[in-house]
Amino acid sequence: MTVYLVARLRIHDRTQYAEYEAGFAEVFHEFGGTILAVDDDSVVLEGDDRTDRSVILSFPTEAQALAWYRSDRYQTLAKHRHAASDAEVTLVRGGLNVEPRTP
Image 1 (cartoon, rainbow, N blue to C red):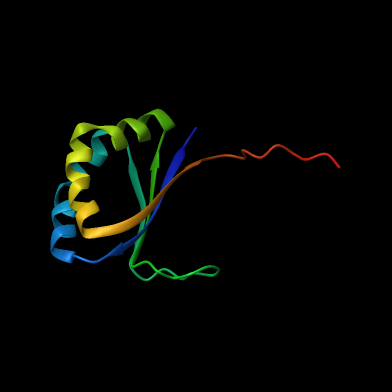
Image 2 (cartoon, rainbow, N blue to C red; image 1 turned 60 degrees about the vertical axis):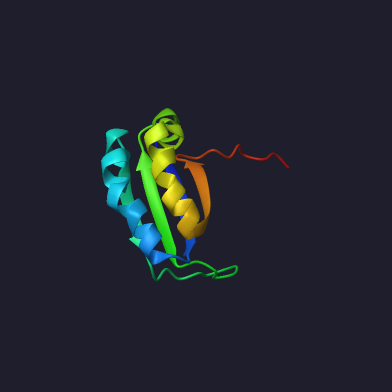
């Protein structure tokens, strides 16, 4: 089942963040991921708009997404992102994952 990683970031050091971006694609594509959207001007319809960038990634399986996220190569690279930004990253499983409620 396809899974999505949705990230909302507040970037406070663009130079350091550029270090993260420079190595991202190589590590990311190694695990079968696809970049669906990167938006520096997304529109918040509800809630607080405290972010500079929204990112949506997809992976064919949850195992691939977690293997990428937990890999030593990505975690080494992610240190640049952690130093340069604050983020909320959520894994969302594709498909309908809600059981119908009975009255």
